[in-house]
Length: 274
Ligand SMILES: [Zn+2]
Image 1 (cartoon, rainbow, N blue to C red):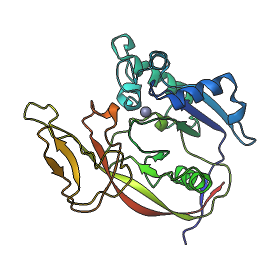
Image 2 (cartoon, rainbow, N blue to C red):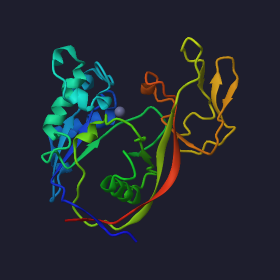
Image 3 (cartoon, rainbow, N blue to C red):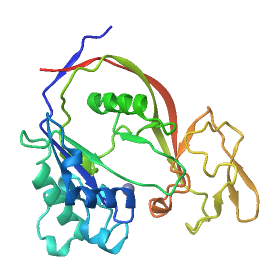
């Protein structure tokens, strides 16, 4: 059995809604908490709600100039001459200033970022990787206390991925003792594009058998697309995989028809504060 890992106490937590201005759960919750944040507070830490992309939220669009949740790169966070840059570069820099700076000792301890998807993914939890110990413990806690169905864990970071996401601004640290556990989670292996004609235009739609089957097993030979001629395109494997973000409307521009994942069980050591 691995030794308990030690992390410093949580002092400051940030909760973001409206990173994408048309994802209304986070938008309404952030606005609700901005009126009165007392519901978020706990005896051992202070929580601060905020709207990630105020202008996109006002217009109820995902973003104005570029996807805010792909804007937290070192290059964009340090860029100057903001007048010539998309509006979201300014948002990202303001968020990094208020809750970071990323990688510094004054950064907030933890950040929640609330999203919606047009795919049939239900309630789920996003963590960069199984190595993010505190977030994985929080997933375990939430899964054990969530009564409205499954709440799968989606591990989004692939090897070599650049840091892009809003939550990267904060540190992750802690308040109490959590015992060791094993957790099942879905790890991203590949982003799958639609079949395309030679001119780059989409030539097939998501197959009706695949639609809405997020987090369900996809076996070699199962149909994944239907061409505009009505022919089935089959999943070639080699193994069972698990799809998510199937037909996500915001991912057409990212050339993602669905995301392929593997299901794994991860052991997580216990966690205690210094
Ligand atoms: Zn989103």
